[in-house]
Length: 215
Image (cartoon, rainbow, N blue to C red; front, top):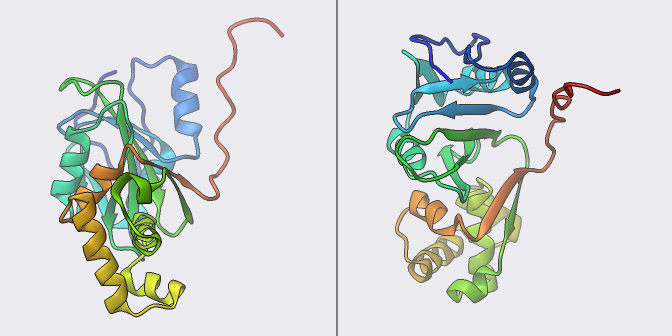
């Protein structure tokens, strides 16, 4: 795959060395997908990802690179540390943000990185192993951590659980101490091997690429 010099968010393009069927399949996939290098240089971006980037206001494409309006350090760290185990990162707030699923075939510095974008407005499901057993969390502490991973704010978690914001924040503080993190970004990284994330209602992907022969 090769890159181009300048890519506008609204442009539909693919790396020119891809076979026709691969380019058509990638561009037609309704899941927002991006392939980029470790230095955030874009190698491929499909149509749905371009649309989401243009609409979010949190990400942009400039001079062939993916940029974050804020949380730029988090984006760079997510891409730089991507490996075979997918990790999840939240850019922006709980009410207007983009959830990134990041992965690579290996952690090599020259290995391309794959990004899948999820809109926070789309319900997100978190599958997690037993965090209470792994970190000694209480049921309430585990609940607020999972709420945070889903993109909920302290207020939203408080309203959903019927607890005060002060109580929710106390659960957060104790959970962070037990897990051994200090920030939300560290929490996502720490729990990436314990959780998997998906949109609750994913749009259907494009049809698989045609076979080369046979009926």
